Length: 208
View (cartoon, rainbow, N blue to C red):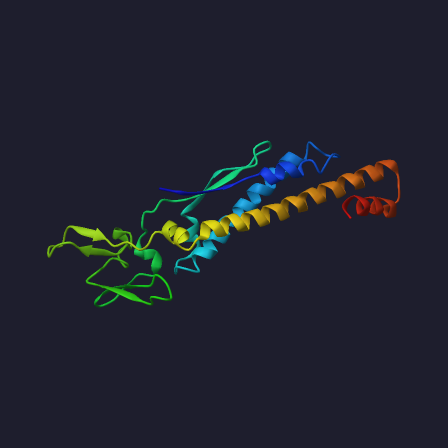
Protein backbone atom coordinates (compact mmCIF):
# COMPACT_ATOMS: atom_id res chain seq x y z
CA UNK A 1 0.00 0.00 0.00
CA UNK A 2 1.26 3.48 -0.79
CA UNK A 3 0.38 6.97 0.29
CA UNK A 4 0.05 9.29 -2.67
CA UNK A 5 -0.12 13.05 -2.42
CA UNK A 6 -0.99 14.71 -5.71
CA UNK A 7 0.11 18.29 -6.18
CA UNK A 8 -2.62 19.86 -8.28
CA UNK A 9 -2.05 22.72 -10.69
CA UNK A 10 -5.61 24.05 -10.81
CA UNK A 11 -4.59 27.35 -9.26
CA UNK A 12 -1.81 27.67 -11.78
CA UNK A 13 -4.26 27.46 -14.67
CA UNK A 14 -6.07 30.50 -13.33
CA UNK A 15 -2.81 32.41 -13.00
CA UNK A 16 -2.09 31.89 -16.70
CA UNK A 17 -4.75 34.51 -17.45
CA UNK A 18 -2.72 37.13 -15.59
CA UNK A 19 0.06 37.30 -18.15
CA UNK A 20 -0.65 38.28 -21.75
CA UNK A 21 2.76 39.64 -22.80
CA UNK A 22 4.59 36.28 -22.73
CA UNK A 23 1.98 33.50 -22.98
CA UNK A 24 4.47 31.03 -24.44
CA UNK A 25 6.78 31.30 -21.46
CA UNK A 26 4.23 30.89 -18.70
CA UNK A 27 3.34 27.18 -19.05
CA UNK A 28 6.99 26.14 -18.77
CA UNK A 29 7.55 28.49 -15.85
CA UNK A 30 4.53 27.19 -13.96
CA UNK A 31 5.50 23.57 -14.44
CA UNK A 32 8.96 24.46 -13.13
CA UNK A 33 7.31 26.00 -10.07
CA UNK A 34 5.31 22.84 -9.40
CA UNK A 35 8.35 20.58 -9.68
CA UNK A 36 10.48 22.86 -7.50
CA UNK A 37 7.81 23.02 -4.79
CA UNK A 38 7.41 19.23 -4.98
CA UNK A 39 11.15 18.67 -4.57
CA UNK A 40 11.32 20.95 -1.55
CA UNK A 41 8.24 19.40 0.03
CA UNK A 42 9.85 15.97 -0.13
CA UNK A 43 12.60 17.33 2.11
CA UNK A 44 10.01 19.00 4.33
CA UNK A 45 8.26 15.64 4.81
CA UNK A 46 11.58 14.12 5.84
CA UNK A 47 12.17 16.83 8.42
CA UNK A 48 8.63 16.54 9.77
CA UNK A 49 8.78 12.74 10.08
CA UNK A 50 12.00 13.15 12.07
CA UNK A 51 10.03 15.13 14.64
CA UNK A 52 8.24 11.86 15.46
CA UNK A 53 10.92 9.20 14.99
CA UNK A 54 14.69 9.26 15.44
CA UNK A 55 15.97 8.48 11.98
CA UNK A 56 18.41 10.14 9.56
CA UNK A 57 16.92 12.47 6.97
CA UNK A 58 18.45 10.55 4.07
CA UNK A 59 16.79 7.34 5.26
CA UNK A 60 13.36 9.01 5.26
CA UNK A 61 13.93 10.50 1.81
CA UNK A 62 14.79 7.04 0.46
CA UNK A 63 11.20 6.07 1.28
CA UNK A 64 9.72 8.89 -0.85
CA UNK A 65 9.76 9.15 -4.64
CA UNK A 66 8.35 11.64 -7.12
CA UNK A 67 6.49 9.47 -9.62
CA UNK A 68 4.96 12.21 -11.75
CA UNK A 69 6.53 15.49 -12.86
CA UNK A 70 4.68 18.60 -13.93
CA UNK A 71 4.98 19.68 -17.54
CA UNK A 72 3.40 22.44 -19.66
CA UNK A 73 -0.28 21.74 -20.01
CA UNK A 74 -0.32 19.22 -17.15
CA UNK A 75 0.60 20.92 -13.90
CA UNK A 76 0.18 18.03 -11.48
CA UNK A 77 3.03 16.27 -9.70
CA UNK A 78 2.89 13.20 -7.46
CA UNK A 79 4.96 12.14 -4.48
CA UNK A 80 4.61 8.61 -3.18
CA UNK A 81 5.74 7.21 0.13
CA UNK A 82 6.59 3.52 0.14
CA UNK A 83 4.10 1.05 1.55
CA UNK A 84 3.32 0.21 5.12
CA UNK A 85 6.18 -2.28 5.42
CA UNK A 86 8.20 -1.77 8.57
CA UNK A 87 11.85 -0.87 8.13
CA UNK A 88 14.99 -2.29 9.71
CA UNK A 89 15.99 -1.35 13.24
CA UNK A 90 19.43 -0.46 11.92
CA UNK A 91 17.94 2.89 10.88
CA UNK A 92 17.12 3.65 14.51
CA UNK A 93 20.62 3.61 15.93
CA UNK A 94 20.74 -0.12 16.72
CA UNK A 95 23.82 -0.99 18.76
CA UNK A 96 25.26 -4.27 19.94
CA UNK A 97 25.51 -4.65 23.71
CA UNK A 98 26.66 -7.47 25.96
CA UNK A 99 23.06 -8.51 26.54
CA UNK A 100 21.69 -7.97 23.03
CA UNK A 101 20.81 -4.90 20.96
CA UNK A 102 19.68 -1.44 22.00
CA UNK A 103 17.82 1.07 19.80
CA UNK A 104 15.73 4.21 20.07
CA UNK A 105 12.60 4.90 18.01
CA UNK A 106 11.75 8.25 19.57
CA UNK A 107 12.63 10.47 22.51
CA UNK A 108 9.38 9.73 24.32
CA UNK A 109 9.94 5.99 24.61
CA UNK A 110 13.67 6.28 25.25
CA UNK A 111 16.20 3.52 24.61
CA UNK A 112 14.78 0.03 24.16
CA UNK A 113 16.59 -3.31 24.32
CA UNK A 114 16.17 -6.72 22.76
CA UNK A 115 17.81 -9.48 24.75
CA UNK A 116 19.98 -11.92 22.77
CA UNK A 117 19.59 -9.97 19.53
CA UNK A 118 22.64 -9.48 17.30
CA UNK A 119 23.79 -8.15 13.94
CA UNK A 120 24.54 -4.37 14.00
CA UNK A 121 28.28 -5.08 13.74
CA UNK A 122 28.06 -7.84 11.13
CA UNK A 123 28.38 -6.55 7.53
CA UNK A 124 27.47 -9.90 5.93
CA UNK A 125 24.12 -9.70 7.74
CA UNK A 126 23.54 -6.21 6.41
CA UNK A 127 24.07 -4.76 9.91
CA UNK A 128 20.40 -5.49 10.56
CA UNK A 129 19.11 -6.73 13.91
CA UNK A 130 18.43 -10.46 14.12
CA UNK A 131 17.03 -13.00 16.57
CA UNK A 132 17.31 -16.77 16.54
CA UNK A 133 13.88 -18.37 16.35
CA UNK A 134 15.08 -21.59 18.03
CA UNK A 135 17.92 -22.62 20.29
CA UNK A 136 19.92 -23.56 17.19
CA UNK A 137 22.09 -21.10 15.26
CA UNK A 138 19.58 -21.00 12.43
CA UNK A 139 17.04 -19.96 11.33
CA UNK A 140 17.25 -16.29 12.26
CA UNK A 141 14.63 -13.59 11.91
CA UNK A 142 15.13 -9.89 11.13
CA UNK A 143 13.74 -7.53 13.77
CA UNK A 144 11.98 -4.51 12.27
CA UNK A 145 11.12 -1.03 13.44
CA UNK A 146 8.02 1.03 12.63
CA UNK A 147 6.65 1.91 9.19
CA UNK A 148 7.44 5.48 8.21
CA UNK A 149 4.23 5.64 6.20
CA UNK A 150 2.26 4.60 9.28
CA UNK A 151 4.02 7.36 11.21
CA UNK A 152 3.17 9.86 8.49
CA UNK A 153 -0.52 8.94 8.50
CA UNK A 154 -0.83 8.48 12.26
CA UNK A 155 0.40 12.02 12.89
CA UNK A 156 -1.97 13.50 10.29
CA UNK A 157 0.87 14.64 8.08
CA UNK A 158 -1.19 14.11 4.93
CA UNK A 159 -3.39 17.04 5.97
CA UNK A 160 -0.26 18.99 6.85
CA UNK A 161 1.16 18.27 3.38
CA UNK A 162 -1.98 19.47 1.63
CA UNK A 163 -1.95 22.74 3.58
CA UNK A 164 1.76 23.33 3.09
CA UNK A 165 1.64 22.60 -0.63
CA UNK A 166 -1.40 24.76 -1.30
CA UNK A 167 0.19 27.73 0.45
CA UNK A 168 3.68 27.37 -1.04
CA UNK A 169 2.47 26.60 -4.56
CA UNK A 170 0.35 29.74 -4.62
CA UNK A 171 3.20 31.89 -3.32
CA UNK A 172 5.80 30.56 -5.75
CA UNK A 173 3.48 30.70 -8.76
CA UNK A 174 2.50 34.30 -8.00
CA UNK A 175 6.17 35.20 -7.57
CA UNK A 176 7.11 33.62 -10.91
CA UNK A 177 4.21 35.32 -12.72
CA UNK A 178 5.18 38.68 -11.23
CA UNK A 179 8.77 38.22 -12.41
CA UNK A 180 7.59 37.45 -15.95
CA UNK A 181 5.30 40.49 -16.02
CA UNK A 182 8.13 42.77 -14.87
CA UNK A 183 10.46 41.29 -17.49
CA UNK A 184 7.87 41.76 -20.25
CA UNK A 185 7.16 45.38 -19.30
CA UNK A 186 10.87 46.22 -19.18
CA UNK A 187 11.48 44.57 -22.54
CA UNK A 188 8.60 46.51 -24.11
CA UNK A 189 9.75 49.74 -22.53
CA UNK A 190 13.28 49.36 -23.82
CA UNK A 191 11.90 48.62 -27.31
CA UNK A 192 9.92 51.87 -27.14
CA UNK A 193 12.97 53.77 -25.89
CA UNK A 194 11.28 55.15 -22.78
CA UNK A 195 13.10 55.98 -19.57
CA UNK A 196 13.66 53.62 -16.65
CA UNK A 197 11.44 55.86 -14.54
CA UNK A 198 8.52 55.47 -16.95
CA UNK A 199 9.12 51.71 -17.16
CA UNK A 200 8.99 51.49 -13.36
CA UNK A 201 5.77 53.51 -13.38
CA UNK A 202 4.22 50.99 -15.77
CA UNK A 203 5.30 48.14 -13.52
CA UNK A 204 3.80 49.88 -10.50
CA UNK A 205 0.53 50.54 -12.30
CA UNK A 206 0.32 46.93 -13.46
CA UNK A 207 1.26 45.26 -10.20
CA UNK A 208 0.23 47.86 -7.68
